[in-house]
Image (cartoon, rainbow, N blue to C red; front, side, top):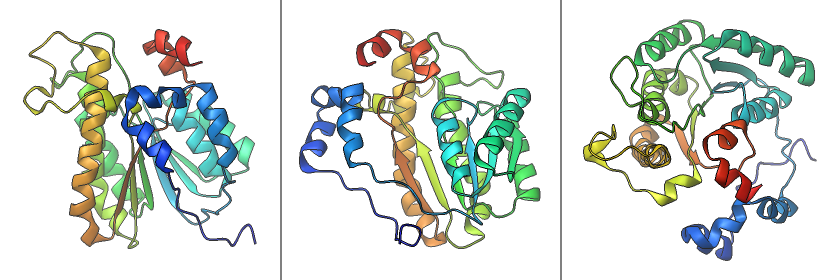
Length: 263
């Protein structure tokens, strides 16, 4: 019965929805107490993914690593995209050992560089013409303004431009089997910012890394709304989500005050 039950669609209660819309009121949900309260309603995830090919960017640590482990446990063919090939290989071996899933492939790319994304997409379309699920997870928060050697502000490049470019290139692979999914990992920080369309590269005001990150993540959700309409005729389903508070090295390093407050 467990392995044959149909997946349930998550539902959010009225009180939770209200708190979610009032960022300050919803802040307790981002602490360890919020997690302890919510986990009472967690249902075990048992639906198998055997035969599915899942690509995830930024899978060597944090949210991406946790998702990769869960997906591997469920039997999917995994494609991990990471910047550091040595670290990626170490993660691949660890996941394979923990899950018994040996169908894990590695590709190297810096998701802030369009040339790397083009090279990655060319390789994927040649070797993996069918992708069932694309998870745009790679992201970073930079305390000071940096530019890539292609001239883009780095937070915008990795958190918004990269997912856009990769998704656009992989649409044929997502469409190939008649029902692909594209999942973009946003952030609760987006609630604090609107998109600033005339200053996407943060050139016209003093740089704030948290704002730049939040605006890029807001842009990713707006982009998901656009994709929902554009890709629906091609039977590609798109999702955007934010994971709430997570105890990751990235959060601890980028937002130490927030980390101490919510830990």
